Picture 1 (tube, each protein chain N blue to C red):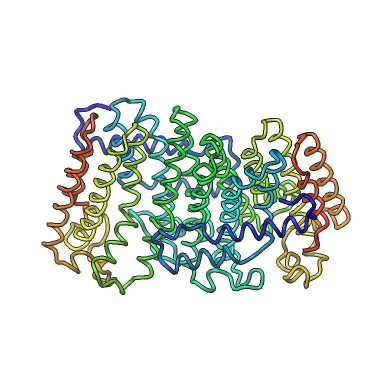
Picture 2: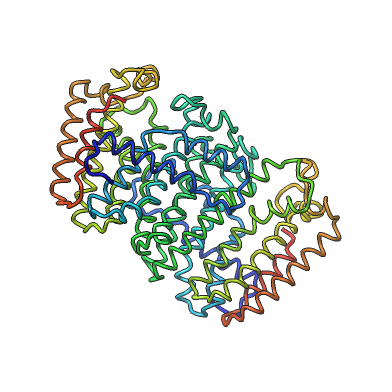
Length: 304
Length: 304
């Protein structure tokens, strides 16, 4: 990929590459009931920043400056987007958050019904693991590395990861009173998949254990900063830019960082976490393009 | 395992081994919200014949008569039970079949609520892939074999496998008119996971491609026979032995094999499929104990 791209251009470019790759993620030879396939693709193609796949690809390139590393990381980039998409479909269900719209489009169950939305989510989650294996089948990534990525995804997306964060959020609604509880929810609902994306890309690029450790610190910090920035934007963001109503956290009496520590301290925390993240990345001593630094800044300064 | 066990004893013994293994499937060091863990374990420990895990273990032993093969297959046996359990939790939801009881116990969502039941299912599905990796981490199965098992599970449990069968069943309710449609549903809702169980066990045992092909034929045939027998038992079975009401298919106007081809022809089909299955197994030329033959007979003759 062209090194002279701005971060904004890089993220747009990878989003468009990922969208192309997602279009053919279900082999045409497979006998999938038409409506199930339609339901899966409806949500998979519903847009979004495609931030997690960009992290997979940027991390792979940062470790090994080689277009083959980025190509080999593409199936994993698609896998993480399938996991993210399934979690949104299930979260939007009437039994969970009961949302009718997401990014201005009707949510999956409003179009296909609750039962099909549950099944489409299940199928996307299952298919994410299929996509990971394709890094080995199509791009020669070693079986050891692909298996390690399967293992990490099964932890980071599972009971002690994303699903655990979601359960804690649900159980704690209105009952969250401490910054520690809120931190647990944010870490698992958001940071875990961000850390996974970075580690998986870096592993495909051939990162050392020491590099992986620093990349994990980077991911944990930007993941938390990302979520606090979300809380801030919900309070003071521009509805037109965000594409959604602000103040929903206040209306739903959700406990957030600004609620617990105030707006100024929350902003300071985002800056502190971003600095911590960059320091960790410095220590990783990566050779490839330094897009991860740019992504950290982009996330901190984003207004949507 | 003792070779002199009857098939009934073998199935009971493996069920009890699998239940022990399932108890520690979530590492105690993991930080899982207590209620999520409770919800997952509630359904995982709700009993059942544990038929699929028995097939994994029997297939591993049939290929390689070695207790280490059975030990290495145990994590995969647990994985398949997690997949089976998650599918039951999601199927029982109000949005799907809306069942209040299963095997005489309240269904997951009746105890933990719909949201937690959805999350517990998601977590079990995700954790099944974690269990597979343990065959490599704890028992030295090669990464290539574990990755192949991950790949096959992602197909057989996914959009063109079990979830596809479930979607087709849901979409076709009351609209199924041909034996071909019914066969698609049975093959994917039931046979796919049975075939996966056998192939995964056989791969851990070190089966050749030719052996895997015959084992696949065996699995497809006993899977279909199993489902037709289910249809027959719903019509003429003993409610006390089955532990559930009979004639539910008729009451729900479900299209079944007996409905489409009659009771006698359905019974003949079960026998034909069982013979086909055994012939395929003969051709596989396996060296280990021939428990798979016994299991085929057991399934054909079962009354619950």
